[in-house]
Length: 178
Image (cartoon, rainbow, N blue to C red; front, side, top):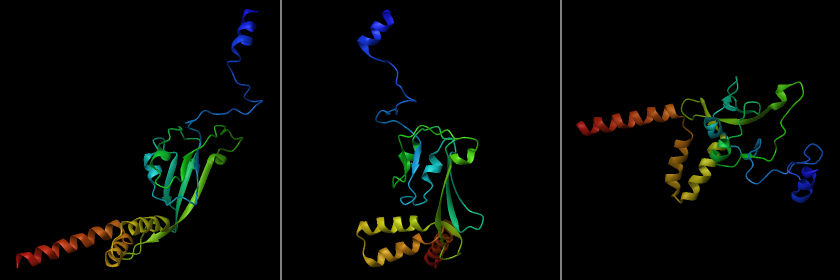
């Protein structure tokens, strides 16, 4: 009887969860929600994910970049939310992630178009990431010539950039020795 008196005086200490919706507190780290429209394919979320729940890789034909989230591996740490530059991955209030019979229902996928290098024609990044970078460069306020030079540089893969740099430095040292 004493327990019932305390319950009446102080109220319930538990929630009537399965029968009423549970309201999560502010700052709750629920299931990451992926917004395909905002994603630029930078793979920062995949690099930051400690449980490898997020993978970003080229498909077999090397025509699309595939973003894949496996909710079964997620530890809800929030690193993907912290590192995403466009807020394409944000933690939601969703915490009920159980599925029946098929684990594939826990997978979420998105595909992005690939950008090819102007020099070697190999895929190296996404078109959305190139557009994002160019838009950020335009905000800097450079003149058209500098912007055109930077645009050409952005459309080149890292291997070709390295080759161009080595070639330019070799020409510089050869000219200087003469």
